[in-house]
Amino acid sequence: MKHLLNKSERTEWLDQNWRYSVLTFRYSGGVHGNIAKVIDKRGDIIKGVRCTGGGYDMGGTCLGQFMEQCFPEQIKRLDSREFYGLHHWNTKTKRRQYRSSKDTQTGLDGACGMSSMQDILKKIGFKMQYINETRGRVDTTTYILKTA
Image (cartoon, rainbow, N blue to C red; front, side, top):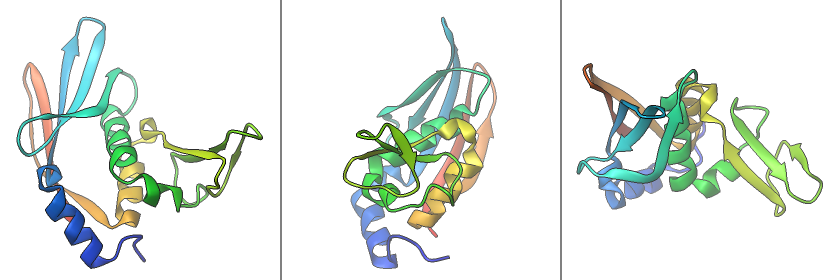
């Protein structure tokens, strides 16, 4: 598979964003339902990456938000027919389209599943390696973000 970022760009991105080399998905119960957040290598919550509710893939939703935040230009280069959960919305015509243009807003619907989001991440040039999982009052799942 040809990646959107070449090997040196991927390595440089990981070097500059070293705190994202370990991602911990934290799931807990809240007053109004379940809460999922992503924590970086330093133990800080990544701002703008969280979801609430239940009954769908909350981990996939958080991963989709993380990718929208970190790789917006790369996501715009993808064809929505090739990736489940990717959409390009044309704000002028009020219709979806397969490729991004100057009038589109591109987004990821992570509720379609963690594996669909990992497929998009792999196309960009990264992969997530599962490390461990803990269960208790707060459940966590930890991954290492690596170059593909």
